[in-house]
Amino acid sequence: MLSTPLSGDFFGGDGTAASLDVTQGDPAEVRDLAVGFGSLRTVRAEIAVEVPLVESDLRLQDGRLRGTVKNTSTQTLLKPAVVLGGTVASLADLGPGRTATVDAALQPFALGQSISDKIVGQQFFEGPPSSTRTAPASSPGARSWTS
Picture 1 (cartoon, rainbow, N blue to C red):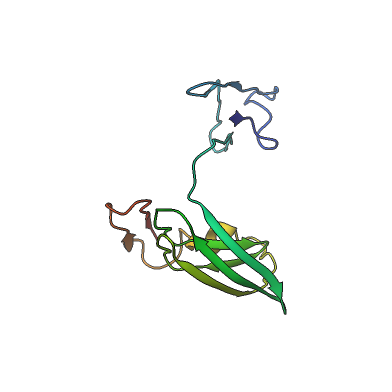
Picture 2 (tube, one colour):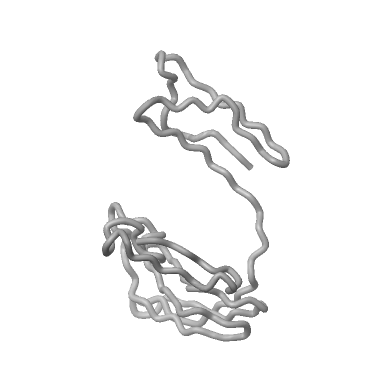
């Protein structure tokens, strides 16, 4: 599904209301997306995907998120994370049939910090621009990023 933004640049360069033509289908398309110099436009896209099966037994206890996560799929989960509000419990890679223990102190949302920054780290301003980390390409679900 594609949809137009709920907020953002509602006006074209001449001050008139701007509109997008979003067509659903395979593939979905966005037509007439005008972006002025020095401005940003957003479009939200969603798609259903198959995901590995995971079982969890989690609870809140003494201000902490505690419990277990079990990978019941046939795939290795790379750097899985459990997220509750502003709390992120990052886990080590979890092979098929393996179980990981979760024990994380509850954390409030940090103003200006996204959940993705807590899970995979900031993509900018962390180390020299030339440092690169890459997972093996042969790994199912391999990740590659630069920081």
